[in-house]
Each structure stands twice: as structure tokens, then as C-alpha cells.
Length: 382
Length: 66
Image 1: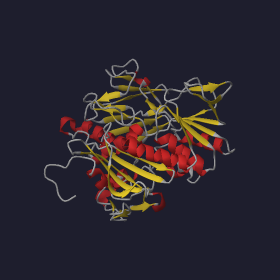
Image 2: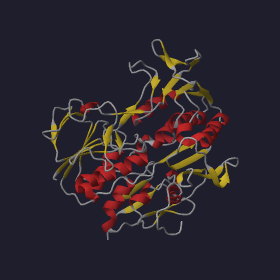
Image 3: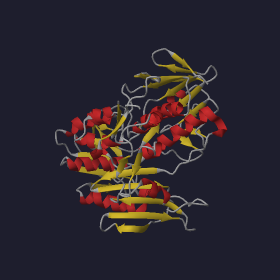
Image 4: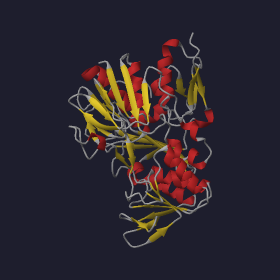
């Protein structure tokens, strides 16, 4: 292999590039990214950067080494799989022996007609646009009470703004389970956030711009600024017309492969028959696995993934490793939720660990991870 | 000896441990989840690893300077 092309210059793309070099690959690497800036840390966009505490430049991650060619502001618009070429929006094309698809995802919106007044928070640009909209002390309405929605709400409270969040279901039940999800939602309420559970989809109230949300029961919620934080959609449209064309995520095997020459990583893909896990930590593991699979094929290790997510706000810092099962609630291993500092563990009916979470409870991540998976057959001390 | 040095912006660090996974020779979360930089000066053989590690911090708290 002597020419690798990476579509996507965010975390998954740059991690794949770095891993190829770390694995000793010394051929050419070309990374194309449509954003016009280098990779940056996304988690602070809903927190410090939005609040104005952190400068936008402070989230930009260190650049790739000079032996990697990075083309910012260039978009991949097509794949010629037979000729092994990626087609670019500037009319050019890049030939490859190996391709890493890390084209990411974009914010899902309630209405896609470009009507003004509907904010999303996905990119640094989105963040700065929203930040300037918050400067005039508006009232804020957030559709979606997941991690992102509740983090934005926390930042709004920090800025002294009146804020409501609306969701179909009680916040974070799917992500954190009933016990911990409800605990975080209560912390948001105590922090002054109005949490509205609508039990079905809401629709936007729109005139010349987006004004608010109308629930299925006809309740109207209006605000000066309306933000949708209802998840993301994989960027796969550029693959239309190729054998990889799909309307869902790009499905890859447990080594992140589509075939021997094409791998994928990050928010665009779903690994090994599981659902997509569009999170920072997943993108890293997938990019490393994908890069190694491109170089070593079946000899590369499959994705060794224990999911890890975290959220911060309303006075809480929550870190969760592992995968929850519906109906399984955690046991408290240390501390207590009443005291707002706890270590929780979820156990399957057969007693095997499924997941573990720390709540305002600093500890090594490795320990949290060990508590989130079955003990290996022969293991050292915990 | 390489001149590369790890710089940690400690107030930013949230203890997610991604750097530790990527370069355990250089980073370690202690018992309280506080990040220790094990060798501020990076040995030449570890520079590539260090570069990769600082590039995946979810809060951009790490830099490599030379």
C-alpha cells in the first residue's frame, strides 16, 4: 500500500492518520476535510466555549505532522470504487490503495428548510453563532434533553438565562437508565431548567422564522432562541452512486472494514452489527482499529470496545463506561447519590458487570472500565 | 535527546484518560483520577506516540512543544 486517502479531518480522520504512521506505514497520506479548520475538541463547545470562558482557538487540537497532506475546505463528493478514486468538489480526484471513510455526521434538525432561527450545536461555527445569539439575554428553548441538550441548558443557566428543554421521553433514560437519568434530570430542574416531557414528537412553530415548539397535545412553547439537540445523521450522501451508497450508517465489520481496501471510523459508521456510537471515545478506538485493519487485514485486532461517555453540568460530572440493559438498575458501590458523589455499577441478572458510572467521584478511568466488563479468566488484582 | 516536551493545561483536564490509553509511558491517572505527566521531556522513540496522544484529548488540554 502506498497511497492512503482519508475523507474527514476531524478526530476519527486524524487519529487514523496518526495510527497509520505509528504502525510504520510510510506511504502517502492525504486527508480531506470540508470544515476549513483542523480537528478540534467538540465537547467544550456546549460548555466553556459557549459560555465564553474558553477562547474558540483553545479547542483546536495539535496539527498532524508534515508528512501528512491535509486539505482543509475540500469536500469529497463521490467515490469511484472500481478506479479507487475519491472525487472532490474542486473538480480534482485522489487515487487510493487504501481509503478511510471518516466523513462524520451532522446535526439532525426538526425542519430542514433553512428557516432562520433554528440553532444546532455541532461545529465550532454553530457554537459561535449560538454564542452570539445568547448575548442579548434571550429566553431559550431546547428540543432534545439528551447529553447535548442538557449541557446547553446548563450553560444557559450559567449565563443567567431562562431555559426550557423538551423531549418525547424523560431525559437521559436511554443513555443513563432510570436511576441515574432521573437523578441528572432532577439536578437540571433544581438548577432552574424547565424540563417538559411531551411523550411524542413536537413540531416547530414557524412564521418568518422559528418561534418555538408545539407538542402533540397542542401545548405551545415559545422562546427567543430555539435550539434542536436531537442527535445526528451520518454523512453518507457523497457515496451515492457508488456500491457503498446507503441511507443509514456505513456498516463495517468488527475491524471497521467494508472490504480490504476501504475502512470507516467515527460517527459515520456502525461497527459489527451494533448501533452507531457517535461519541468521542468510540471514534478513537474505531479509527485505530480501522487503520490497523487497512495495514494488517485479519491479523489486526477487532475493535476492543467498552463504550465511554460523559456529561457535565448542573453541578454534576458523570462518567459512564459499558452498555446498559433495559430494566437493569445500578447498585451503589461507593458514596451515595443523595450526597451527590457516588460510584455506581450495573450487573446483569447472572452477576456479570455491564456498566459503571462515577458521579462527582474522581477515580482512574481504568478502574471504572474494569468495573464495566466481565473479569478476564486470569486477571491480576483489581 | 529529543526536545519535545508535554505541556498540560491542568485546569482544563477532566481526567478522561484518552492520553493514558494512547501513551501509558507518558500519562497516568492517579488514584484520584488526576493526570500525572510521567516524563515531561519525551524520549525520541516516543515522540510519535506522544503526538498521537495529545491529538485526541477531548478538551484539548495537551500540547507537545519543542
